[in-house]
Length: 510
Image (tube, rainbow, N blue to C red):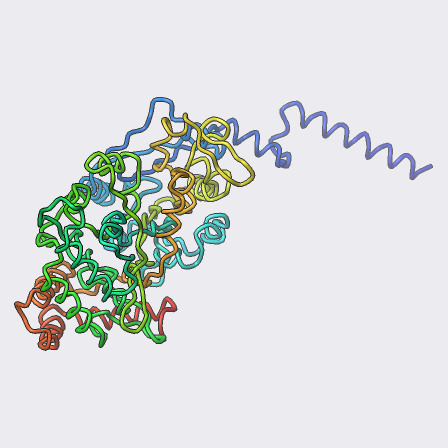
């Protein structure tokens, strides 16, 4: 009986407490998950500002990507867009000095990242990577390394690199001269000679050359045939036999230079390659002045491009050519700088004291890294701008006309080859061909230059000296003197030693 009375008393007490808690005395009541969600909803979306270079792209009045992201993440996202890179960097530097950086901003290069980090403006993101599971899974460990500076994760790099470029050749010229597509460097030279001297267009005039391109990018596949990167490129470091090396010090370099000199001496190369800029080389190819060019599918096979060269000569036919093999059977289309990034996103240190805003920025980066979110920022809204057939994306007419700005929201990047094949489905075979060619993976994008090394000055010297070698203004046998000047006058040895140390720390080489 006493037990029953005690139960009834405790029940009455509980009801009394509950009654008073519901009548204004509930300030000390424990919060529930449902209550937290309601409180957040009542507080409204979190304002987030992201800044980047727009390159002239503007946002539409009906910004359907912003609407979808705001709703999904619970934010009010504002993009601050600056059209020009110099203007953008200047604006961000001013805002860094005043402690007023956007909540998410793009560092334009490793040097820009270094400047912002050394000013104390950036948040070290190393402790926050476990809050970015979707992002880290999407980009992978190799991409993450691109954002490391002084052993700290100061940037979140975008994934995706365009893998393109190879030789393109006039098949109708080959047919006219009863020639096969060249498979080796020696065969390439013979075809280039025939295109120059044997009237491949059958117009009765001596008005054609074999090979053109923009500066010494023209010879990318020839350098590649010797297992080297183009010395005129800023991508000079790669792993050979387990060690990080510079292309300048490889024993095949003098042979590669001699081979290129042979092409120039034979008179089969466009004499203006060094001065070709912009579309000059491709214009000559389209006008029927040259039969081989080092370029990419987008510059030659998009509908508007085909209309130009077919308009000049309806019988013209351009085909892709696999990179020619060198004397030891090696073939490479060109180099691929796997350390380069299409974007380095950083977060200001001030967000350390604004956890709600910081968490929303991280949530945004995670969402655009999911399959759903990444498709949104690539193509637009499903069933409006694209449809799915299984896992295959089909872009609608509305998607082609209305979604040209969506790249501005691709904060974590995109699977580049798949994206291009979806967007240009009729050109998928050309895209795949170039994407799957062998290329030397270079590492220069991972490296931060040491004090005292000026890459612009060094690269200018390198270009001037290499031009002398291949045009016969300097003897290739004096190549060692070039290396000596590069090391001593331009501090290249210091740069190389520093670069090797940094790359070893990242796991490249021994």
